[in-house]
Image 1: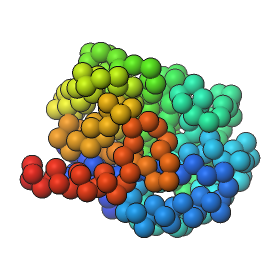
Image 2 (image 1 turned 60 degrees about the vertical axis):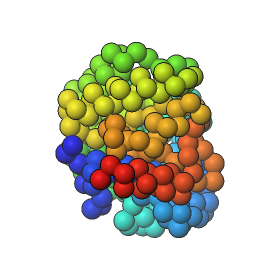
Image 3 (image 1 turned 180 degrees about the horizontal axis):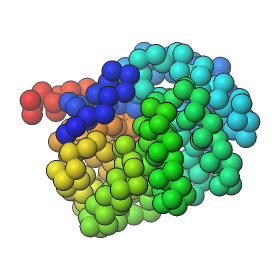
Image 4 (image 1 turned 90 degrees about the vertical axis):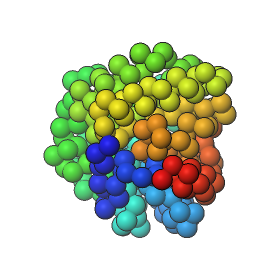
Length: 253
């Protein structure tokens, strides 16, 4: 797999890199949570700006992103506005969504940006181009909180994301049983074998937790972990995840 290097960190090489979500409502709490995450050993951080009290104030969001970047000089920072339709905490109309993400991408404060595939193929392509121009990795995302699509549909979705310019395609589905988890892992493995590029894949829920820990074998280069609270069902505490993945890495190395 050809890794993506962000702040000197090779995403897609060796163990999956852990990422914890910061979901605080104000900048003081955000910075404190970032410090706790660093102390817990998190590799990367996601700022879930849909929880931020000033999400409609673009200048305040950009300022907060810069403050976060300053306390995370060695940890890649992913900027995410997660819409309610995709399991998030807020909703922006499309124009505001585009304006907010464009401003933060151009600020120089972030390393990766989440782009929801539901905004339409042309807009996703435009965001991917703008992101790459600003040395920001575009993470094109899709979430299904009800089910796990078929193997064929998942592979087709990951391939579509790559065609749209995704630096890292992200797919999160809901697992109701072990078979669902296997479907997700099988699709991730096929994508890895075909494209040799990093992806971010997971099956949510307790039945899908295993998919968050075996990415080194099946192709998911990042794994979301919990810090104080989970941002999605089935997340494993970051310190436990790192220990388990380290043990697995030692077995296959």
